[in-house]
View (cartoon, rainbow, N blue to C red):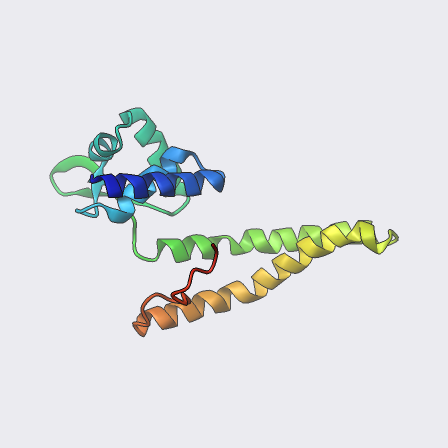
Length: 166
């Protein structure tokens, strides 16, 4: 792994860590996003990341359950291989839709509990409900548009070459 690749892998680790996953999960996913060949064994991941096999073993299970990586085997090879499957990021976003629906419904229930309360008290739950209702409505259409643009070969999708966030 080059120094630049190591920096990228660490940055992915930090990003996923900020989202609540272990830093090692981000480091493994970051490596699997850029490695060649695309399929890596637990031993090769551990060697590249200077991590223990135990840490890699536990973390790949977490990433596999999240749908971010795939485990595969090869004929006459006892080792397991890990990779980032095509469409995994979209699938993870799609899998969050039931949770989005559940949060909207829970917020609606809370608003019923607080129906006699002043608007200032209800505003936090209204925002929670409104954001999740918006995501529930827009996420499927957004992902469909993404797939359409990707299949059309539109290049970096939705990115105005200016930085969106400083």
